Length: 322
Image 1 (cartoon, rainbow, N blue to C red):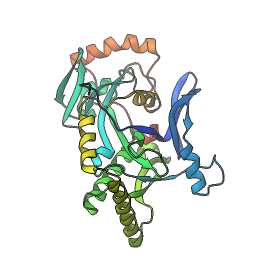
Image 2 (image 1 turned 45 degrees about the vertical axis):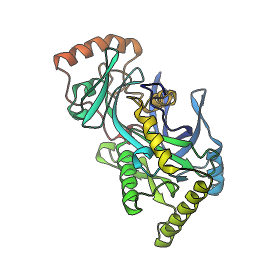
Image 3 (image 1 turned 60 degrees about the vertical axis):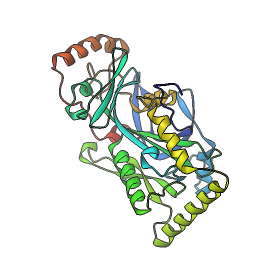
Image 4 (image 1 turned 45 degrees about the horizontal axis):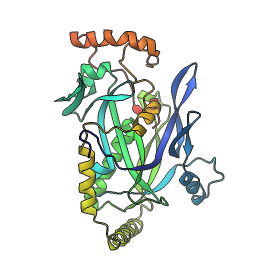
């Protein structure tokens, strides 16, 4: 392995509930009230649909391929929730991670090296205020019908509601099912809610639920999980070794960062690309020349300790439904 490179779980495609649109020369986030399964290829600025999207539409007997998909049949690849879902605070410069932390410890790129520092969280960090540090979550799930048992589809989000809900559900499932999550048949479903920060307009997030929430349905899900795992074990799969290898691969690098992440950040962080200086009233960063002029001033203010203690921002999914 190359030291310093995080070997992430291979992905076959993306799961998203939002995108960016160009308006007035700016890339603006647009929330959507449906789920999209895409490939990892863009054409004319749009992600191409994955064949499994159309398959899910047909399986759910929706009216047409353009119908709104609001749930996906998925399975978890790992027993350990930390391998299926990873969340952390992340700060960016030019679409690249410069600092990641968990609220206790952080790793930051400084003068060509990586240093470990205390992480007080974005509300109490001057560096976070300068570089619009926000929570980021990555969920890896397998979609029914995919053709690679060692790959997943990834849902990337900076929304508090998706992050909070997905983490809580995974921890509850782990506790309730004795830690046996791999192969468990679930649904990844869209939820909607309103909040004061969204000015009472609806925004959307994702949740994990049983396909049948009755006691009989849960019992059937456990049976299907066991049958799925037994079949793989008979084929020679060693799940404990698989999870150990996944942990080693992820921990090999200081930052979980891939080419796919960089493309995704174009959609997720149109307002986070550079220091939080020179932004307009909507919180969108100014043009590249303006950012270039603003960066030295931002760093000077950071060193002088004159930047605000917290960055502007509201509920994640009110800005970007992802």
